[in-house]
Image (cartoon, rainbow, N blue to C red):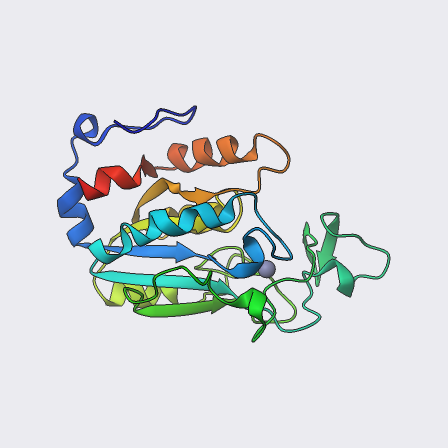
Length: 229
Ligand SMILES: [Zn+2]
């Protein structure tokens, strides 16, 4: 049985869902499993690389897999280095939208922007680049941070007939979080594969807060072992 956590994990049998039927009709969204978000990267999430074997153990089960990449031009507006006097992790204004300013990361064409080298790319049918506009960041896989400019992912997945999505990747409390909330808002049914995600957890507790918020909005938490058995 999967380890219980503080989040409200629901055993599949208790929730009444048939998880295997769900997988057969669902798309998997892998969020930002990139070198810069893993140990040694410029915006490393602690143990970010731990998601890789977990994702590799389940990605082949899905009929469709899309992977996102943060894919910034140099001097992107979300970088603290683009704001004289500002330091990484301070709040800043990115062309009218306030957000955290980050160290330079995931610059297009650099090693740091590549997928983690051990991520199995074979099941991935589509790669979605986000954060490509210099003037606006994109935490969600569905919208830029203005919350209205679409990335196109909604139309892709709905056009392919998917109404149920499973999410994994980095970071639980940032890009995964915003992607799941937007998916629910767009009418998708959303599952979060909890042990296939890692979070920044700054401030401390933000991962648990994000998990609870996603569940409150309708996301269901599962573990990778639920999908394999
Ligand atoms: Zn970014």
